[in-house]
Length: 165
Image 1 (cartoon, rainbow, N blue to C red):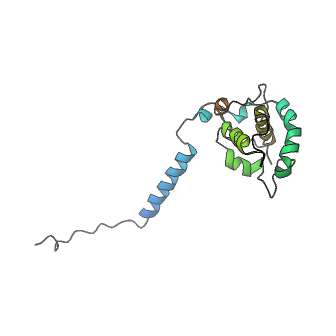
Image 2: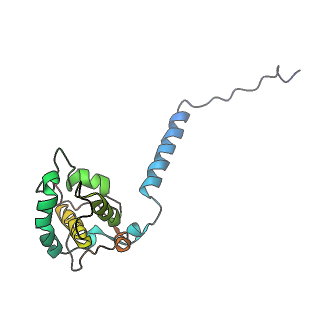
Image 3: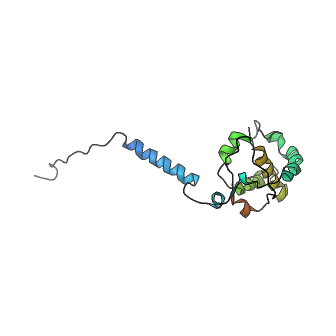
């Protein structure tokens, strides 16, 4: 009997195997990109639920927001046809779970459109405070500072039920 003439028993595969492999791959990718099981500085430290900004910051930046941001993002931070909302589900869907340093750096490096970096570092920190306030996060006793390393230790938590709508 030659090798070619030997018949091997046929292993029967489940019709669900390709689906299971793809499902596990997608799940693994989702968990790793969400940081599940990993402790970053933002996940291990404070969150936006801890009162990481002051009401004074929100009040102080309100006129700057109206002058520099509201034309695109609307006076109520609700967004427009030109720019996304800075509050509510669309905003939280994108930013939730990320460190505040990413939001601060994005604002600093790209906003206002066409005039990025034109505000003071403290003004950008105050804008982050305004955005957090608009999403229902509580104010606290300490100001949010324009320190990227410190902001990296603060995670953007799920919005409180009362905010951002």
